[in-house]
Image 1 (tube, rainbow over the protein chains, first blue to last red):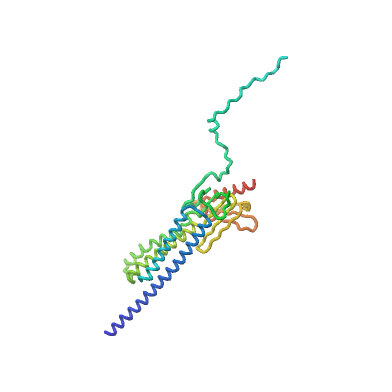
Image 2: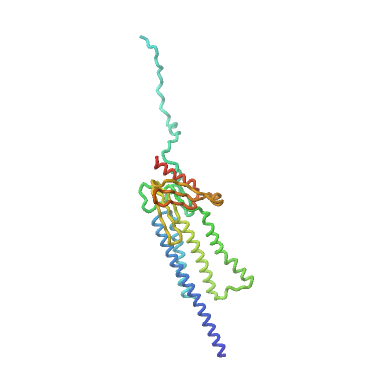
Length: 82
Length: 221
């Protein structure tokens, strides 16, 4: 019985460690995605300054912001839930 | 003494009716490249006289004559890859299930996050490729040629030269795809040590060459 309990505990610990690594991978990937999107938004804003085009620029900016918002939300959610 | 020759009295010519004057079209003094006017939209690749494009350091009397982006067909490789990546899970998961290979060894919440992250990364890939195409712009104004190179996310090169420094303009249209879809590279040769300008994979290259050649001709006149 004792052996069984120890075995289960060990398995559980290993599994948790495994999941923890995955959680870290998710968070690091998400962090890089956020940095990446911030660079994209910065570039879009600088281009907007250089060439003033039609209102399509605004659509692209809004889409980039939406992507950033989703990525940040995912970062927070994965930090809390996973 | 009688006059030998007396000229016949001619009636004074009647004033032209206003309708006749209106019928004749006024002779245009504007060059041919001013004839069209357009609006640049999200997927516009070639536009003469765009009325909604302005740029940094534009002079008051400087008008944009030509707006060019790469031809839409040049986006086919990354667009195809994106579509394949978007549709891949819909095919791969049933195939794996058919062969009884389970990929869902993780808890349910992990699987959900896998899917969300996957689609987020594919969307970011699609978006970055789109803006790389969208911001690669070439402009020809009455006074300058401007080339905006936007490659990747950390490389941005904006070059411009005066029309007076442009010596020659030519285009190359090599390959079946380029011939079918009528796009090619336009080479704007400049004087001296200034780098030449290459408008890569632009639609209607002969038209673009014609516009720049007109501007050079106008300068030489």
